[in-house]
Length: 361
Image 1 (cartoon, one colour):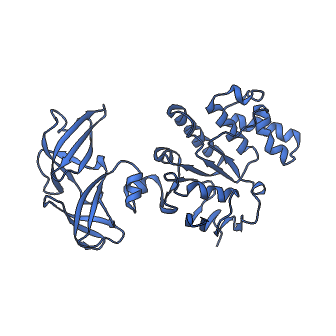
Image 2: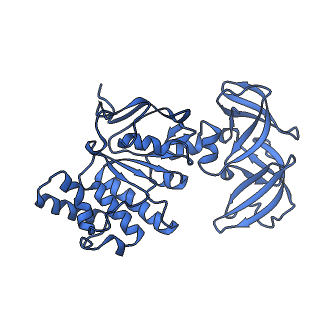
């Protein structure tokens, strides 16, 4: 049986009494784009720094092609790294910055010149060899940092919040470039971000970190349509939560009751959902339908419209339940309920059981 390309096995990092990372394990395939996603302090950057060799784990191992990296110093791991701050040498030109890791490795001058030319072409900075970093925009400097990290053809490229200092338009432009470069080079990328949209845009798979552990690993569609925890459901995409009580649980499906007595049945459960517990039903705004009448074939509850915002191809509606939970509903252009809809209208929200989720509290 062949070993995984990159394996993180039972990683733990503790600072005194504070546990930053606990039992983090995953495998990454060669050429995969894996993103570590989570809020500040969730353990994603700590995991990346251990991979880079900047920190030692308290426990666990990291294996590259079946061999541990922990006994190899960071500068000998041959892993590329791109940071939020570009960390370019201000006294060196673009070409000299990119050539630096090749000179440290004592590569022949002809090889260095060719490699610098190649990676600058890859990041679309041909002809910038003699430019100084101070005379470049933030986006251009980040491209130089990316070219430098790719110059010595590392098997793994680590990227720690590399675009968070850029404005939205430039960030999206560089995201597109990173995705293109990944496709063209096939380099394995581990990418850290707190931005869920960025993670969805770039990644093959996403590891969602929360309080030092991984809540779930999956593709963007998997995490969005089938979150395993309430945290993942709330962190990935937009979510509605309605308070309810669990009446029965059987074969991973729950029957629930809302505060006004309305009943919903056959809702998929996640975790140890217990009968009698107070919990919340989760729905995505675009999976809820709005209608003048309840739908006998689906779950329905009455709501009062509190706001209506037309946004061209869709309309965002805010609705309030009888027990004061607020829902966001996203209706496509031309939906029959949009015409004439206004604040104070009383309608029904309807949904199919299989698009809802119940999580253990």
